[in-house]
Image (tube, rainbow, N blue to C red; front, side, top):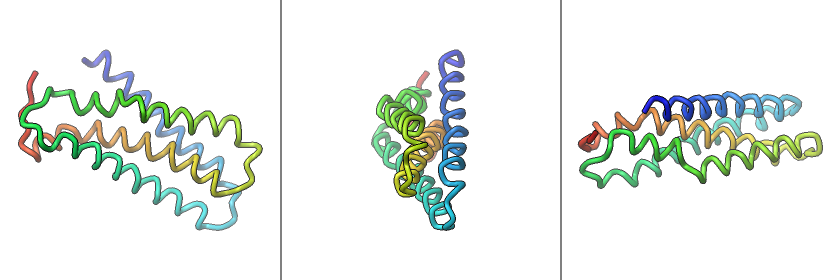
Amino acid sequence: MGIIILPLFLFWAISFLYSLRIGYVLLKEEKLFVYKILPTITAIFLAFAYTTLSLNDFKSSESLWTFEIMFYFLFNLNAAVLYLAALLSYFTLRKHIKNPSIKSLIFIIALSISLGTLIGAFSSEAFMEENNIEQTY
């Protein structure tokens, strides 16, 4: 399992770090503090919301495969497509965008998806223990 899970963790960890860089590059020239701190708080809130809402799908389960929740987050195709859309829009539009709201939106999408995926993958075992879900191998 480590052969499959480790590269995915590395992909999402690198995506998270690159999302922080995207936020820094896009928002460094903004003069107002609101355009710097508000998108960061919003992205963190959305990451926790994404994780919580995704984990609620597993609450009613009595038994799950040990890596099922982790695979759900790491292999989520919708999250990967949304992150790649934010990444592509960053690469293609970063020189042309003057509106700070659009810059903030790109940063919020990238950071919330990557952070939410990492939080969900790392908290899967604790979630299973908290909800008394039996782990099967």
